[in-house]
Length: 262
Ligand SMILES: COc1cc(/C=C/C(=O)SCCNC(=O)CCNC(=O)[C@H](O)C(C)(C)COP(=O)(O)OP(=O)(O)OC[C@H]2O[C@@H](n3cnc4c(N)ncnc43)[C@H](O)[C@@H]2OP(=O)(O)O)ccc1O
Image (spheres, rainbow, N blue to C red):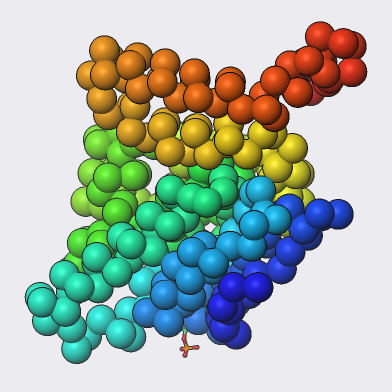
C-alpha cells in the first residue's frame, strides 16, 4: 500500500482491488491543499499498487477542495514560489500521466488549485452542489498548479480569462455546459457515479487505457501529420498485445460484450 497520511487516504475497492478510492481528508479546512497533502498525492500515484486499473478522487466533507492552503503562502518569496509551483506540476503530472485513469467526483467548492487538480483528472463528475471558480485574481496571485495549461484545454482561453479576471463563480450546470465536467448528477451522487465509471474503465485492457491517457493530450498538441504518425504507431503496438487478440477473438466467437445503448 502506498504512503498515506491522515489528510489523504487511499482505499482499494473491487473484487480484484482494481479501483483506488483516494480521499482528500481535511474537511475542517475544506480540503485546502497544503504542501504535505500535495506531496502525499504525488506519492500515492507514484506508488499505486499494480492491481489498480482506475482511480477516483473525492473530498471529504461539504466541498471537493478549496484550493491552495493560503496559510502557507504569506512567507513565500519568488524563488520559493517557483519551487512550489514546480512541486505542484510534478504532483499533478502524476495524476494526469499515469499510471491509471482518474475520475474526479466533485461537490461543493471546486476552486483555485482544487480546479487545477480536477483538471488533471481524466473525467470529471459534478453533483448539483458543485461550484467552480478561480479566485486567484482577488488574492493577488496566479495559478501555479498547471491550470493555465489544462483549464483552457477544457473550456478555452476566453472562458478561463473571464473566470480569472472577474472571479465569476460557475454553477454546476454552467460547469458542465462549459466543459469543466462531463457528467452532472444529483446532489450527493457524484461519488457513486464516479465509482461506476471507474469500474467500467477498469474493465478495459490496461494497455488501451494507458495509451489513451498518454497519447491524447500529446497528440492534440501536435500538427496533424505528427499526430497521425504517433496514433498509427500506438495503434500497431496495442493491437499486437495478447489481451487485444483475446478480446477480439472473444467477440468474434459471440462471447464478447456488444455495444449497448445506455
Ligand atoms: C501562487 O502559487 C500557486 C497557487 C496555487 C493555487 C492557488 C489557489 O488555489 S488560489 C484560491 C485559494 N482558495 C480560495 O481563495 C478559497 C477560500 N475559501 C473559501 O472561499 C471558502 O472557505 C469556501 C471554500 C467557499 C468554503 O466556505 P465555508 O464552507 O463557509 O468554509 P469557511 O468557514 O470559509 O472555511 C472553514 C475553514 O477552512 C479554512 N479555509 C478555507 N479555504 C482555505 C484555503 N484555501 N486556505 C486555507 N484555509 C482555508 C478557513 O480559513 C476556515 O478555517 P478556520 O480555522 O477559521 O475554521 C497553486 C500552486 C502555486 O504554486
